[in-house]
Image 1: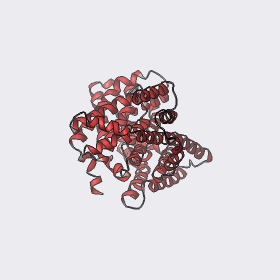
Image 2: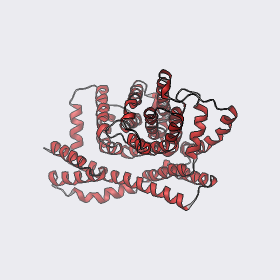
Image 3: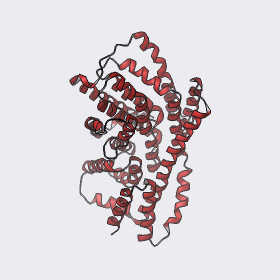
Image 4: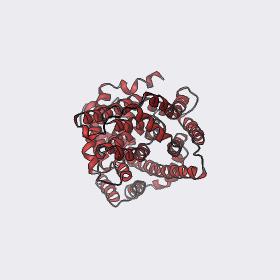
Length: 427
């Protein structure tokens, strides 16, 4: 009876709008009290302490703070303007800037939601100014924001590496090529849509070459931070956590150089960092305790045994896992989906003979898909909340091709694993 009771309790808590961390913690305590003769709840303190003191997880608040500093310093806005100068000649020019700037911002922030929120704040006023179709324009921001967790550094990759003991530096570098490919696929869709239906985008704008060349200097801060963060890791100078700290120091220096270093701005950045970090850590505490209960009750072994007994080939089994994640992404918040499923699914994937780093990149793409698929597509609601007019349905009719691009990339990675594994093999 354990499975029906567990699924029923999980649905009950979620439908009651209980916070995700509370849902997982309550489920763990109830499963313990109902099915275990041992007071497993006594391990909750030790588990929470082990999670809270893990050195790798300290990178999470640092990368969040880094993204906050880039926003308050105005660097994100000037970067967007510079990218727009170079892409404005393409059909749907500003939408290409949305995606390309999201890719650049992703190379420093590590958060999909933060990327989407930043780009929405900067870009949506420009859509109204130049007369873009707001549905497609908003969809390009929501989809571009997902690049925040695929292009390194990535908070979700840190969580995956922590839960699976996979090398975080290898995960970071493995995401570069897939991230670039996905960004180009997004831009290709926008180009095709605006070529077939020119009314979707604004008319092309010819920016003088002098202005284009001058704007290149506005790309330097982002490139500098990316170079410091990633370069320090692969030069062997710093761990991912130490590189995040170096990135924050550079961002603080750039904020001061931009004359935006004030107590008000620092308080705002710190408060935003604490709120987001607190939410993530509470979910991790609860998820780790729930996974501990799963293992103690033998539920993990039951799932592995069930999948092994299906008689499917490794590829068929993997496709089934992908389908399960796509369906889960419709209904479950992405970070919660990761921490709930990874301890169960990862051993199965490794047992099937698949590479842990490769699967990590596949999983991140599946999380990206979940971020832009209703009814729980978080990026869609973030952009709509900033937009504050029209209906979210305007975005939904345009978002499907962006989702399809993610699915195509997964199939490409299954056919050509070296897209993700080539760079990690060089380090």
